[in-house]
Structure formats: structure tokens, C-alpha cells
Length: 158
Image (tube, rainbow, N blue to C red; front, side):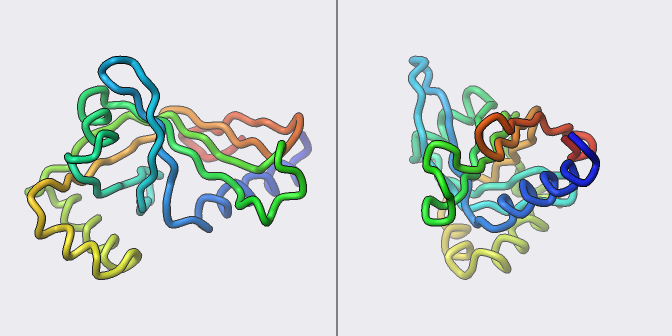
């Protein structure tokens, strides 16, 4: 891959992530069954994704028990030329709960309110919601047929 092409791919995968306010979650139940869901998110400067989710949702229970999830960002169907080759980014993540007394909790909740609106404040008043930090361990960017790249988690390069 030449340098110009690599830089373009990096911009494209970063733009795909930034163009969406929700991420698609893939978790595993205690019985080993896969489960899909989604959640609105914010992302910090280190590339960590934060989601605010209810413990009543099975995906939250799955993440709290396994400390792992896979997340997906995928090009909207209407924007793609071929449904079999939709552009996408996938990250395998480790999960950590951010405690309410942590400075990070306060900071990320302010950012969430700013980005995602007043519903965040309402959800904060409910006792069953948890702020989870999803830290990418490895990632892949698929730009189309035969165009799959590993993402370097330290540098964001391909």
C-alpha cells in the first residue's frame, strides 16, 4: 500500500467512526451465546469509547461479567455501492466500569450530555446505569473487497 493510499484509508476509517453517534455491540452471554445490541457513545483522546448503559440490559450484564465486547461501525446501506462490500471498522475491546467517584466519570458524562443531549441527564438519575469504558485491543478496517487492514492501536495507522 503506498503512503498516499494509506493516509486516505486512515482518514476514511476515522471519518466513518466520527460520522456515527452509536456503535453496534457484540457480546457473549454466560451460556456462550452471541448477542448483538447498540449504544450511543463518546470517544476520548486515547481512543477509548464510553457508553452509558442499564444493568437491566443483557448486553450490560454480558460486558460486566466477561469484560469484553466487539464493536462495529458500518457504512450506511444508502451510501455504499455494493451491499456485500460495505466499509466498516471492527474493534475487539476490553471493558472497565468507570466508578461514579472517578474524575473520568464526571468528565465523560459532561461530554455525553454535550454530544448526546438531555436524555443523558435523565438517565443519570436512574440507579441502574453504568459508564463503561471500551478500550480497543485490536482493530480492523475493511474498505471493500480485498481491502482489509489491521489498525495499529498505538498509532492509529494501518
